[in-house]
Length: 323
Image (cartoon, rainbow, N blue to C red; front, top):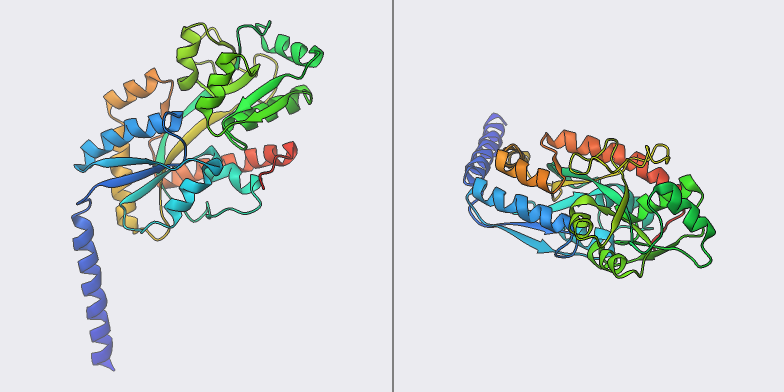
């Protein structure tokens, strides 16, 4: 019996040593990050910036794979079914980690099983209108929607996205039931239609909206952050504009498939934090109105849990569902 126990212990120790040796060489090939949204979207731009810096930090190429559709579920399903070897990561955000479980009757992945590596960044959004809409404040927009002879249309990057739920919260708080939601397959298409005048208002993050504001193609009425944006100090917050308790931030970070060894996860967390603490990356994020979210995996999980509780209630109140 003693010999058998010794043999089992020796085998377990040897297996652990082999695993540690294998992980010590990590990474020894390219790493893939699945982005569950279309190319050119704000998450895609953000992850490509950080992914390039990560490739320099890790010494191996980091390849971005866009798997958009179904509110991010397609990309997250691909991540959840990937090998837990540290070579496939995913970008998780407001939708895929918090609201999708309230919107969809059934998800093809379990958001609670995905392993948080760490947050990347957070940003806020603008409440935007087309310049031909004759309003220059949130109050004027509310009056315009209530008194319009025809329906006022607002877009979103898809059901359950930040742009959709922000508008639903706005409608609920201000009693704007007549406004009509027009969902798109991605934020670029919705933003293009707002610029073209097919939509009257839209919530879009600062990064994507900025070029259109500078070109005079759109007008920003308010920002969704708790404080005014340093880049746009003249634009009031939604709360300052009279929409009580309205704070909405878009955020995201990196995830790993269930079962990925903890030591690999922590290696990636360390590399990600070094990237986010780089003055160059911080400067580039600031130009795009992002704030870095460097921290532990537990910090990222706590953020997702808190946002899930808040926006889950918004989804339920709105009655939004995706079948």
